[in-house]
Image (cartoon, rainbow, N blue to C red; front, top):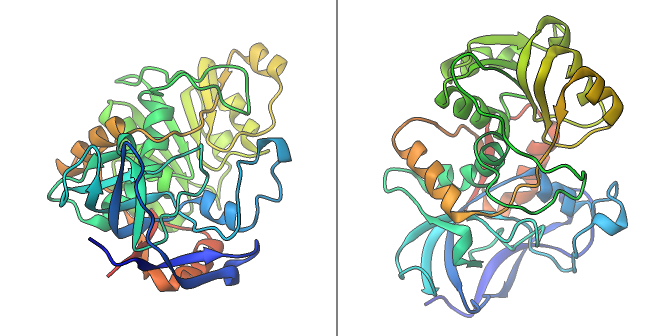
Amino acid sequence: MPTQTMKAIRLHEFGGPEVLRHEEVPVPAPGPGEVLIRVHAIGLNPPDWYAREGMPDVPAELKPPMTLPLIPGTDVSGVVETGDGFEPGDEVFGLLRFPTALQAGAYAEYVTAPASDLALKPAGVGHAHAAALAMSGLTAWQFLIDLGHDHPSPFQAAQHRPIPLGPGTTVLVNGAAGGVGHLALQLAKWQGARVIAVASGAHEDFLRELGADEFIDYTKDRPEELARDLDLVLDTVGGPHSRRFLPAVKRGGSLYPVYFGEFDDEENAKLGVTVTAAQVRSDGAQLAELGRLLADGTIRVAIDSTFPLQDARAAHERAARGHIRGKIVLTVP
């Protein structure tokens, strides 16, 4: 059993990376159906810095509750200490309590988690790679393979339903070198699709190694003008400029912006393009499927950089510089 206190990263105010403090805090206690995990690695995700900033651009009615002081983080890999659903000593990984809790206290030496959010970590996979897989892998899976839930998105009325992928299907992944993008590319190839990867030129060799059939350097060319007759665009960048891909999608095709943008339903209908997005949700069973693909080499997770837990500020500063290849990970001794 752990001691009564642990080291964790907390914020007492919203702001830049400088608000992240390395502090001594009580070890949490698991509730019914939960386990206590001794954390070995934490995957960083955009919601971490959105929460750190206080989500200033999100309407108040869409903001989840965030009470200060707050321990950030949702993605972990570690070892079960005690609790329900797993045995002490089990190595597990997961996306914790998302999206019901935007931040689940993962930037710490110990964290509690619902057992249903967790999967057994494959023996041949390191903790850093397992932690890096959680949110990004589930996002790619729920957009492309199986949504796995009936919860409506807060950003749209239409239910997201992944289109079938296979031979004869052409998928363009925008932002293909990032956390979600490089995993989505591999999942689409696993399903037999032809994949066009869009990223800066520095990532071309990396993405071709992952299976990209074509590559477009967005710093030199406009992908929405080069690509045509696409069955699917997965835009991991998303936002207000996502609609520029609409003319590149064939009638009957789909455009999935990971960060939902500004679209006109009449324009989408006129072009015959389905535009939907999903809110990623914790799912231990889906993570187990992803873990098997990672263990057998079907997919791999790229680690951009690692930082010790106490250097979370430096990790957030790295994220702010952008052009991330894969995932940033915090490690716990």
